[in-house]
Length: 190
Image 1 (cartoon, one colour):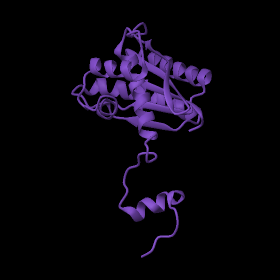
Image 2 (cartoon, one colour):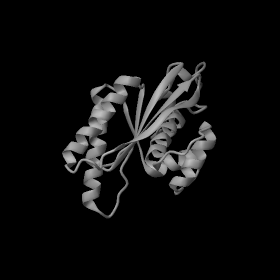
Image 3 (cartoon, rainbow, N blue to C red):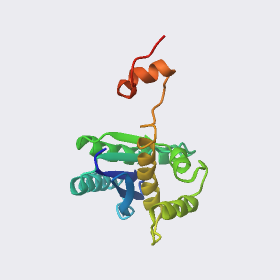
Image 4 (cartoon, one colour):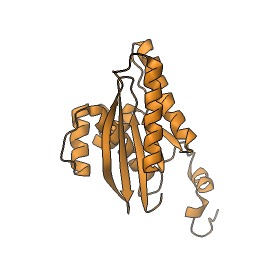
C-alpha cells in the first residue's frame, strides 16, 4: 500500500447495501464515510442489481480506492434469499473487477473476529468496537453501514500485520522463504 490508500468495504444486500470508505494515511485508518444504498423502492430484482452496480461504480470513480473488500454471504436456510444475496454480491464484485481492483472476500465470522475478537459478536458489539477504534461519534441509522466499515477495517488488519500480509497455506519455513525471498537476510546453512 502507498502512504495514503482507500479501502472500499461493501456489505451486500438486496434491500440495503452498506458501503464504507476507509482511508489509510501513514499506517492509520480513518473513516471517510459510511452509508447505505436503499433498494426497497425498486420492486424488480434486476433494477435493484443495476442500482448496486451503478453505486459501486460511482464510489470507485469518485474515491479511487486501492482495495475492495466485501462480505461473503453466509449460508442460511432460505435458498432464494441466498441466491438473491449472491447476485447482489456478484454485481458489486463485477463493478470492482471492471475497475481492475483486486477483490477480497471475508466471511461474517472473520470480520467479527477481526474487529471484536469474537467471531460470534452481534452487530451492536461490532458497532461499539468500531466506534472506539476509529473515534466515531454518530451512530448510523443502519448497521449495514457499520458492517461495511467493519469489512474495510478487517481488510486493513489482514493486510497490515507486523509480520507482513497474512497468508494461507504455508507448509513450513522452506515454503515461507520460497514465497518471501526478500525477507531473507543472508544465506541459510544446512
